[in-house]
Structures are given as C-alpha cells and as structure tokens.
Image (cartoon, rainbow, N blue to C red; front, side, top):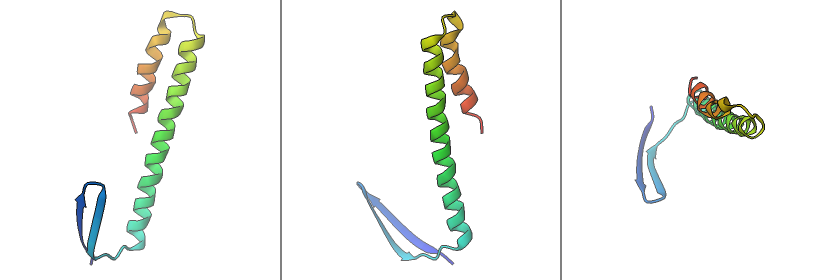
Length: 76
C-alpha cells in the first residue's frame, strides 16, 4: 500500500507519508522517462531534416516539408 502526500509550492516539492514503490511501478516510470526522451530526440531529428531540406532544395514544395514532418512526428 502506498500513501503519499505531496505539497508543491513555488519550485519546492514536499513529500511526506509512506511511500513504497514496487519494482513494476519503478520500471514503468523509467519506461515513461525513456519514451519522453526518445520523443524529444525524434523531434530534434525532424527539425534538422526539415532545415536541411529547406536550405538545399530549390523547389517550392520545400516549405511544406516542415509541417508534413511535424504532423508525421505527432503520431505514436
């Protein structure tokens, strides 16, 4: 059983109570962190690819690459 009380004020987080994290919940948290960082990295790659296409392609469709890649990046 987990009983945690969290009080967040300004930039400080105060936690008090009884906290017992099982191995599965800790694993789930780490998976969430990994997926968040992976999503941020993918977003950065998309920005770099879009910038390179816009810089080096001479056609008019080059400006449509960034919204298209961002749209594709938003799906899981």
